[in-house]
Length: 230
Image 1: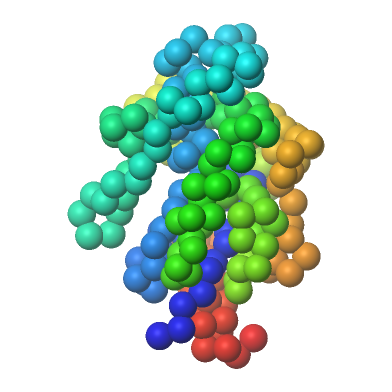
Image 2: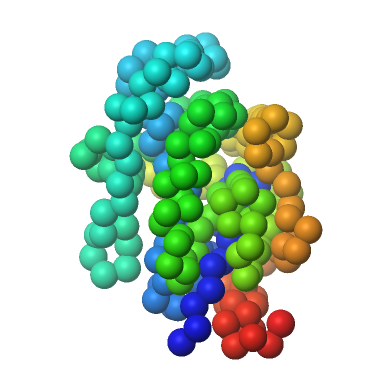
């Protein structure tokens, strides 16, 4: 079967990773969670005293980039989890404390260059679903299918709040909403590869969509691209 590259971009907590995983599983494609890569770098910075009071010690982190090794390792038949320097950090990177620093870390050009280079290599053979902020605009500008996902900040914060509570985190809805809004601002205004919708991307507003409807909508778009109907 003809294989394509699928790029899914969009705002934080729009369910990009969820639908990307579903799509990759259904198509038997490789799934790459680029957000997990930036979160792992952020966790490294936190573990090594490179962040404090909302600030990132940029020069220290840049100097340490050669010491950061990231790898996705398969867990079971359908999932892969990220490892930072050989350690599984999949759960650690999902905490709100990491979310508070990941956008500032992602604004650092040297970090982006390192990770984008790795992401391009991961998708060289096509048959890949990759989600993030700049996949359709920077990593794979020639992707056959580009999706841009959005939803209201309030709806995204509500989803993220419930997710964090389920993981055992002690947070308030207001804290999560403020984090979502702050990340939106940083992601869309950074100088290097800001979050934006590619001209040829299809926008999906899932504010009022359930996961099943969202998946089938995007799956049909993928099937059409693979079959050459669009």
